[in-house]
Image (cartoon, rainbow, N blue to C red; front, side, top):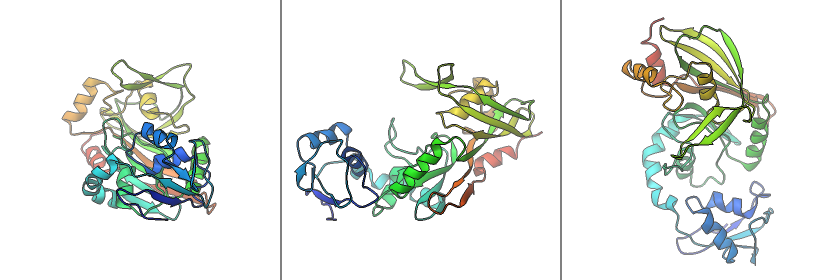
Length: 316
């Protein structure tokens, strides 16, 4: 593979991990920060070539193909120093596990998993900047920006495909979260089986609601400890809908502490007055069969320090 320069095209030889992708999807991963409309333009105009010939977006890449990528200006190049400078220490110290197939980040709250929606970069852009020689780094799943805890990043396309297949099976991956609910929840355990539907408000804000015509969603809540004005619970996800735990907790009448979107203003103000500064939701455990070794894999992340410190101030 020829190394790129700022004003010369790149010649990229396709390896086994990249084979099977559409050429447009391959370019999206290689040209971070370039608008999709520009990627399709350089395909249309023949500036992208495979083995010397013009190609169309749906063309599937094969091992050994040589892709010519023209020089382009990307926002990522201009911003690379920002994620390196701001995220290097946080990301390096947040890697909880790594092998040849994937790594697991114990993501801090407040850090987006990827750029977009007003955020110039996130975990995945930071990792790519920290590891410029890595051929492949892709998110397996997502966490809300304000949620802390375990996040999977694939290091090979084969691992990404295998892990995606596991995550599509509601029973193949054990996903456990810890949350603090507003109010005293009288029950010890409850399975919330309530379909969820995304809605976009006139302001452009995305919100999720329980709706009969929504997608199936199942969360199992188990009480861990009661406090005077709050309840610590474990929430196990059997599906992976957007904001699922947050909306299901709201539907029980006990929204998550400091949830600015689905919580109650009065309760949130009380939590803030008592010292809680963030959404109390933490991805605490992931368990699945390792896609390459076939062995059971489990990883756990203790509560973020700011959450544990807050719990230590509460009275039963």
